[in-house]
Length: 384
Ligand SMILES: *Cc1c(COP(=O)(O)O)cnc(C)c1O
Image 1 (tube, rainbow, N blue to C red):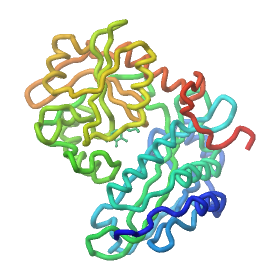
Image 2 (image 1 turned 180 degrees about the horizontal axis):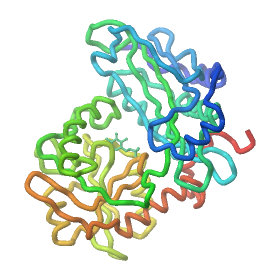
Image 3 (image 1 turned 30 degrees about the horizontal axis):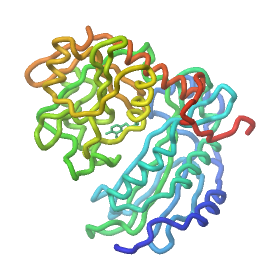
């Protein structure tokens, strides 16, 4: 495997970005049905008319970028991903802007993370330019599926990559399929932002140092489903994990990073666990660190123990806790439960800093607040 070229030369990429073949869907969803779906899409239930596919093979690198009708993929039963789980993905959203254009939030960060995930899983690295072009191509083809400007609705984009070589030998695949699918997404909290309870798992961990916690791979999610079910039995919507070595330090949740607020008002301190090597570096997390500082909060990345969380919430030092990720942006946490008890946080209500940060970020994303950090990238211009 050493010396295998995993990245096509930049010149080829530029040429290729312009060379997506486009095959329109022969029978797209009728406009009135599409309007019905976009008006009440839920999350991840409906998919647009098209998808993007790009192939990689050792020897020829990335080739055949295409926009094709959304539809089933067929695989030989011995396809490697089905056996050894070489799979990674991303999640980001395209928002209709007030001027009619369609923009995405920091997709360059997702492109870089996708490459990093690929590297950890010994997969081919997709050049950022091709990643970004794939989003523009798909959103351009399915622009009618992007909900109107003004609300929190969006078109959720799901880039992913799988090992497609056929064979049972345990080694990195020599062939990959990169694809992007899109799904209209409603506001995450339809009846207003509501706090959830979180299960602090002491039976399972999410990721160990040196493991795959920093990669966005499907396997991490597979491992989270049993603890998730355990949490659900206790009425919890999400699971928070402790570190695998000492079972002491808060890591993150199954698909969300965690923030803790100490104190309130001008004295508020916003704390999130530092990226010590098992935590997935969320784009939302990174953006909130910037926004919290601008809000005047003291911002700290450090270790937080599970005990500190439980005691701090009980004695009122910790006033707010929230999870963050692309899908829900910010989810307030109203209580934490574990094998030996439960603690309410901030009276079980979403706190002021939680709500303010959520508003600041969503306003930038839907284009109603100035994008002072140049976080937004236009995927489809207004006129097209
Ligand atoms: C995707 C993900 C997040 C959130 O990342 P964002 O870039 O903010 O969407 C957090 N934790 C895990 C484990 C994830 O997979």
